Length: 329
Ligand SMILES: NC(=O)c1ccc[n+]([C@@H]2O[C@H](COP(=O)([O-])OP(=O)(O)OC[C@H]3O[C@@H](n4cnc5c(N)ncnc54)[C@H](OP(=O)(O)O)[C@@H]3O)[C@@H](O)[C@H]2O)c1
Image (cartoon, rainbow, N blue to C red; front, side, top):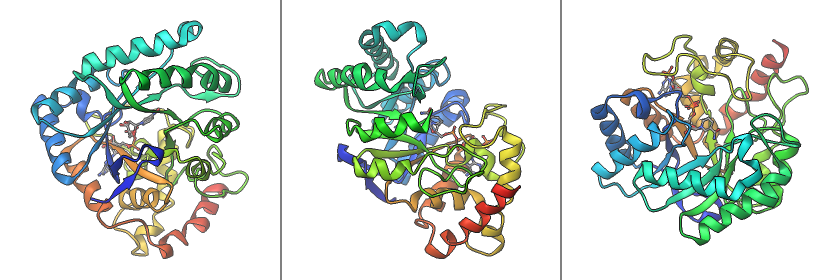
């Protein structure tokens, strides 16, 4: 397993991380023995970063992850999140502290390595979001106090929301990490895309993260599974997913993913799953790539793909032409 430095935190994290979210759902809906086996195998493969959140399975993900890590006496990095409901925005520091206390109880830990804001960030507050001002004036200072209290070692954000809000938050230089949506259907955090490209333009956010030494944790590397090119979901996966930042719905993302099939047909990679993982790792701003798993086989396959290293230059050189086709489709 390759290890990379997670920005200014200095932590050396595995290039492949373990997403304990709702989409794959192995850590939420898997049988206890399957959950423990998957975490044990992840440790053997050298994975040392696990990502969870209170929202995943309504606390179940944190609880099950904590249980598996304790049973295995694992020494790994754990990141969780805090989602602020609109009603809590009048008392942000107390709401963040309460949420982390509840997370620590479920995880069975005294502290986490990373606490990340889960709300999207927008220029002005909207339903479910927080504003740039909320983040810089209230949320970051509150997260900083939890670092002083030893409840979390580092803090960061989820870089979803308005690009015009995310860039100034990152440029403020106050974040340890950012979770960035970056995949073959949503490449704009790392690459210039044509006007009319069918996804949000993240304005080369990865460059901003690198300049401010915010460690980048890639999320949705398979566009919630669409980049596997399969229409049907694994039986324990979330049956329906809203696309995040990429196409208007899952079926559209699957159709667009198939338009990238030349990468496989021309022999650059064995599969689009391999292409996606190795694409994300081709950015030197990226520290770790989270993948959500429905099965042990998916974990094994992902680790084998990552072991092949970042996508080579000649495969990367094919992408602009393939992306042009997406823009025109
Ligand atoms: N901060 C945030 O707001 C945020 C948002 C999204 C994600 N995340 C984090 O990022 C993690 C990953 O995101 P995600 O689960 O939403 O999306 P993802 O990793 O892009 O996609 C996960 C899906 O990909 C498919 N897959 C995985 N490995 C595969 C393989 N080897 N072969 C074929 N298909 C494979 C599975 O689909 P099937 O189940 O259908 O087989 C799985 O459910 C989450 O667990 C979470 O920790 C954070």
